[in-house]
Amino acid sequence: MISWLKKLIGGNSPDLKKLYQEGAVIIDVRTPQEYKSGHIKGSINVPLQGLSKETGKLAKMNKPVITCCLSGGRSSAAKRILSARGIEVYNGGGWQGLQSKLRQS
Image (cartoon, rainbow, N blue to C red; front, side):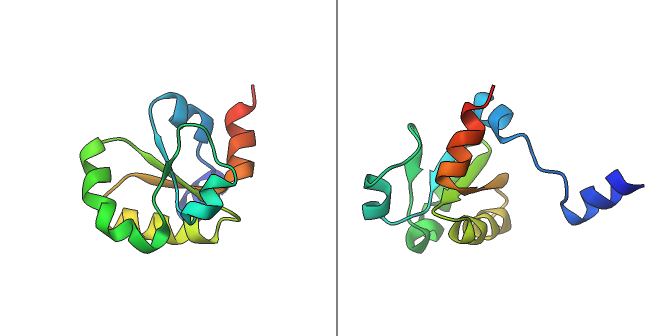
């Protein structure tokens, strides 16, 4: 019963490391200046302000997307934008936390 309720309200966290290992693309939605100050190797910088213009390219990749930013706020907004356009997307939260999750064994 509880697992069903968690799924209903989104309580189960996806295994982001597994998604990434299986080919998910990491989209960092911070500004270019923030991205240059540090980012996950292999991630793509698409600032939140320009994300709507890039959804066609992301959809053509036909891969799940993991969004990240500094603290999780912008990546959450990015998730809503991409999800509304039919893209399989997961909010990775802050980039440093996501990087730690991806490195865990």
